[in-house]
Length: 420
Image (cartoon, rainbow, N blue to C red; front, side, top):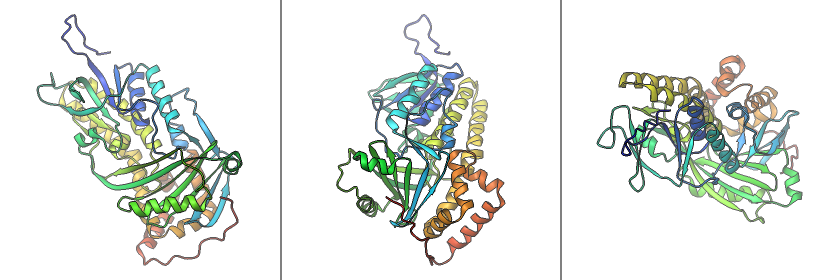
């Protein structure tokens, strides 16, 4: 610990690591730093547990990134996926093994925070961070960062991790640059047992009417999470898509318990991941899979890396060593998650042009379905699939070429009567 208190009452505590934001990225960063034996303060502006707009799908990479002993609070286990193309050509693919699990974010996030606390991190909720300062009167030396709270209180740290969401103030300090922003709308719909039973163990993915859009239904016991996502700037069309989607599903007569919206943001390829002794991760860094907009696994994985490198930055004695550790963190992110994002951007570009082709391939081409299963279970990633399977690499090249051609959608697969 380097709390650096002395016998003098006016000597302010200096935390090794202050983490801003207690979502999956922040809790993972706090856990990683605390497990390393450092003094860690985790700040969260809301009171926990709190609701978060999110489908709540836990795929293999998310599961594999959880702390030891973490028991997932699963609400359902998915063994089947129904794919449809704007409400038509529905086809269901099934798996004997579980594809992925479904959780409610308030429970999941709370449990992650509790693991960080058990590891030694201290939590403060109801705290809003106004800004961070790395120079000036609030900073006693070059090894410190000042975290200024609403109301004027100032905290000191050797390293700061920004995990404060897609509208991150820490991200603004670092200078995060974005090249994709999408709008997600979601409703939590309580349903009778007869409806819930029909959805148990099965999710729906619907390729939507706007370029790059899609909708989903994720069952969680007596509640269905129903949502859609599309590019920002299509707000009215996105809202209409959600309303029509819910209507087609026969769910319009049920009153949602929660209706919410959220902007997801993907970083530009040259966007910084650090500034001085401040790192960003998760949504605050714009780390998100561009095609599916899956973010939980990116948050967990980047949060863990941020926590580990924040410890190294906290130990750095000068600007040169600090810069070296920050560059190492950026390299670790780009070598893993960055490659996955690059492949995801290629897939999104092709999907925006030819969603019917994607639907046909996923529902009618067994190797594509196997790849989907492998990715959701965590035996590979998008990047790993393209890197190690020549057929997947060739398919992505073909999709890139076809996406550049004038749009001429072929017929989608026949509807096999899958229930929705």
